[in-house]
Image (tube, rainbow, N blue to C red; front, side, top):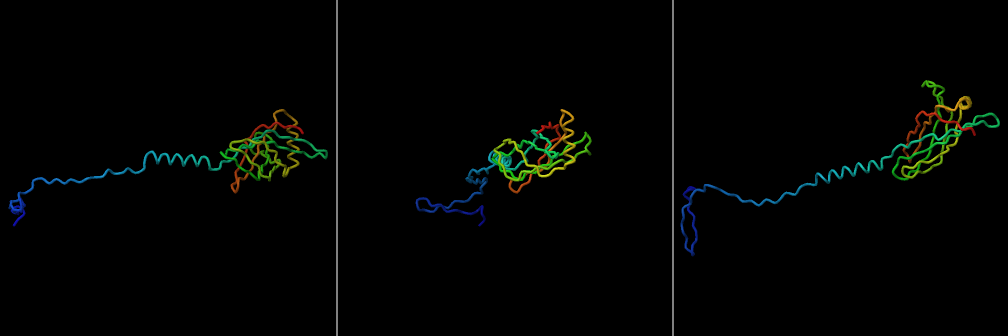
Length: 194
């Protein structure tokens, strides 16, 4: 018996009724489909990336700035040149930070030629100091070493004019185990005699 000729028995009031099967012309399949949940995308991902960038901006260490306030030049009783540098230390950290081992070299130019850069002295502050978030602090690092000939020339240059001398500070400072380079741009520094 083929599928077209198949007969089905249907019970009606307990009595079987034989019916001939007719071929189906249309088949409908009804399936229930659950609504698919969307993955967390769009707003949450963008918010996560923005939060990560903000945390990196806050907690990645940044190099501090230093600047000259003034340079004190003087002669002692025995004729030696004394130098004292007053510098401004500006932290660019968003939190209170402890710094240590400030070591800077004082350089000056005899003229506008880049080949005339001379190291005059080296200043150091071995003790630690702290700065609040984005705070500036005035420091007087101690004299570590001095070139007496260059210091005398610097003293003579300072005494000649009101323009001061073209000088800069260049060195390093530590925060924990990280070491940061610090430098000032070339600037006319007014000499204060003391």
